[in-house]
Length: 195
Image 1: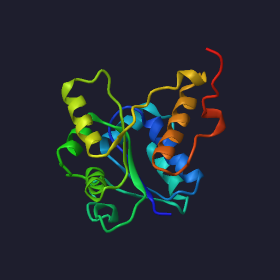
Image 2: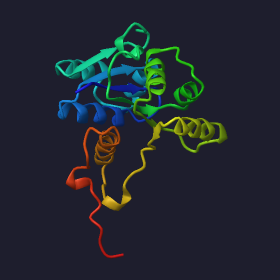
Image 3: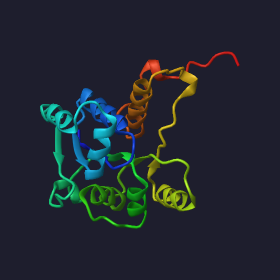
Image 4: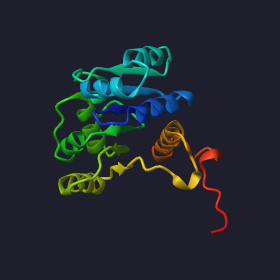
């Protein structure tokens, strides 16, 4: 299987990124990670485990590799390198704006730009609220280019009570969106019921 690129930008929601990388690796899906400097700062505020420690643990998995944000010679900067798709989780509005307007001045943005030009799957998990008109215009522009926009809305209908459960659910939704899994685990599927 070709690898999936996981980009982590500087928006709030580091837990979503952590759960997404873990979900891919649990399924033996190769992961190539690229993380912005701002994302590392947010991680420090939101996650008990230091980013360097998480990175070290992921690097023990043979299906994982990572590149620094300025490593523009990395394979994922080229359309000739085969990948299964990319997710940016969480995705800042700054990253959204750059992608919407073809600005690719770091490896995360370049990898996303490659997905757009090669017509590969690109999923963005935007983290901002409320959204103003420019945010919405940029997201709509990307959606018209085929990008999947997945705001991390909690599945209230499942009765999940813990943030950890909601983040885990959402990581599985990302896998489905990228075609890694064909359906959600049973515990995250709506069972229906009487109204």
